[in-house]
Length: 431
Image (tube, rainbow, N blue to C red):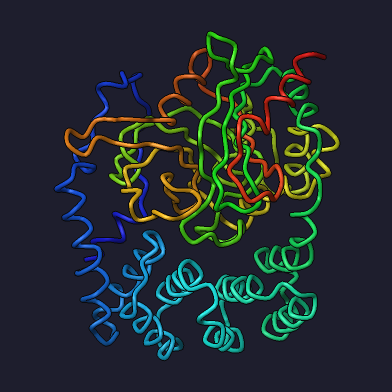
């Protein structure tokens, strides 16, 4: 039985929720005893006991779960490293899901120690996603033009029809453009604020850095164009992390949150203990579900087979200078490749796993947007919940739907601050 697969991977949500009072939100999962038990099970049974085995058809699922745990909780030690080496030595005999979890684990916690092993997987690659994961690992270690060209040559050799495979087309674009894009200026945010005001949309902006090790901030713009502010006039901002545990590129499953436009289709309360009971935003990506839901249309008038039509509609969600800004197409192309189930939620994960990281005490996810939540480990009650505050602020005006824009401001190596955005908002409000 795949005990940890459900715990680590599934997101189960109810159809809706009645607005909860903050003081009524409780999670027994965050209490000290439960956290200690979970940590012991994670380290000993899920990882250590598994890596003491030799993988075979009866136990291989345990190695997949162990790799998923290593990635999510950033686990590293000599036993883990030896276990990963053991899996690479049997790579060609492993099932697809185990290979994928292995590549994700080394990308997450061993950024350069497995270059030789990953290079070997490329020469025998038959699955486009696994090739893309391996190429991303090697490109992160060496983003030179020469290495990028070698990776593209390898891609063409392994997949002569790569230009018909969406994930490989996105990989090619990533190799060609990423180094330039992180240095390019972001279009004027005030123009985006005006565009959404004129469209009378409720909007959340999640403003991030290209380096997702550094947390971002979310802010709320109401349908009348006003930004949510405190009674004393200060702009309301909410700490939010857009980094996945693996920090794989945006177009790969479990990669960090793609930039772009997400449709907000209401709120829900998760049954996943790692997400916790604080209300979350249910987001829809392009190509996820019906286009009527994504574009929030009264009638479904979009041909299902017309990618060009929906791409034009997607671009209309943005003002001209933003629709031509390629990074804002990430969510569209990630959705076309098959990414789904990205939501904006809180967390019950013990931040202690990430102590020393630039994003501490926020916790990374499997690609969602995660707001800061800290819990009282004695009684299971919330101490701090940026997620609850964000949901409450968005819900303060009529309507449960809207759009969420994920935007990288720049590549500065520091958390996004109020000062980064207050001046832009004031300039917009002064017009």
